[in-house]
Amino acid sequence: MTIFSKTGLSAVLLALAAAPALAHVTLETQQAQIGVSYKAVLRVPHGCAGSPTVRLRVRIPEGFIGVKPMPKAGWTLETVKAPYGKTYEGPHASLTEGVKEIIWSGGRLPDDWYDEFVFTGSVAADLTPGTILYFPAVQDCETGAERWIDIPAEGASAHDVKAPAPGLKLLPAKPHGQ
Image (cartoon, rainbow, N blue to C red):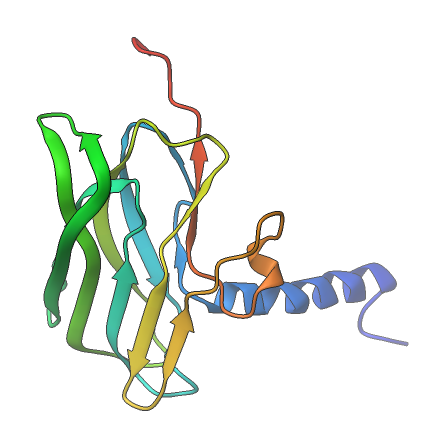
């Protein structure tokens, strides 16, 4: 007699097959409406082959504007600002430059622990619904690094690449007044 029924064994195998997809840096909420602010929570579930994470770098995609990272106790926070590819209309002014990279460093996140790194920004109003904005992330560890920077080709999904960048699917803007 076996421990698993065919249905139970199928469920276990399906869960094991999905496990590697959960092992990379991801966004907690993977959808956002166009033209509104969005709180990005990057989840870091492990280190690099047992080595603690000591730095996380995130590149901000074109069209994600007005970025403000949240400081983390015990970590140093840096930002890299640069011109945007075009001028965007923000809630209070036209924006021509902003944060293009965020770097948290100097902390130590053991491989067995989980943590989150947070920033806010706005999804530009002129982006296309259905588009996915990718936030490539490099996780540096005491020994080694994980480069979550792969962006799927047109028509492919994050499951088709080895080290997918965290992605944010853009939803249509709400009509005014809602």
